[in-house]
Amino acid sequence: MGYGSGYGKKGLGRYQDMKVQTASPAQIMIMLYDGAIRFSLQAKKKIEAKDFEGKGVFISKTQAIIDELMNSLDFNIAPELCTNLQQLYIYINERLTHANIKMEAEAMNEVIELLNTLRDGWKQALASEQDPTVKKLNDGES
Image (tube, rainbow, N blue to C red; front, side):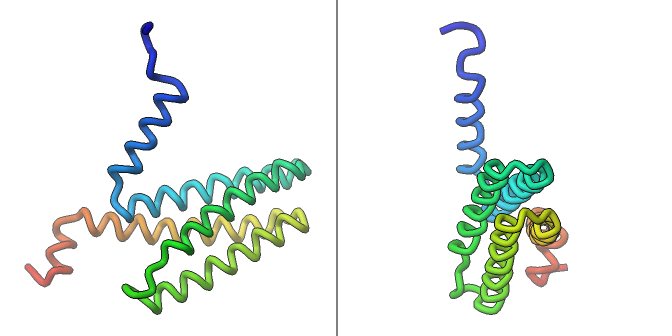
């Protein structure tokens, strides 16, 4: 075993696995949104470059994340919120399909904007969860 073994792709993969395993549900949601945004931006670049195959790969990756987000909805905890998010995820998937078929960068812009808004909402929720002042106010303490 030489110097630096354990690093590189295998080391990075282990780090990412540990990061996911130790993350809170809100942090995992942010990671999923970050991935969907990253893949959407790459799909948009592929559309602009007229790279049909590359566009399809990155749109499929984005759709897989959106499907995972949809499957994670718990209607028992927040039925109205989950219904609204489900409708939004369905709409995002429709826009992704449109962008895929029509090679339309504008549809990707809309998807990216929606995903950024959703991610920002989760970031705010996570920040308030970690801020003891906000937690005390939410728990009714002063």
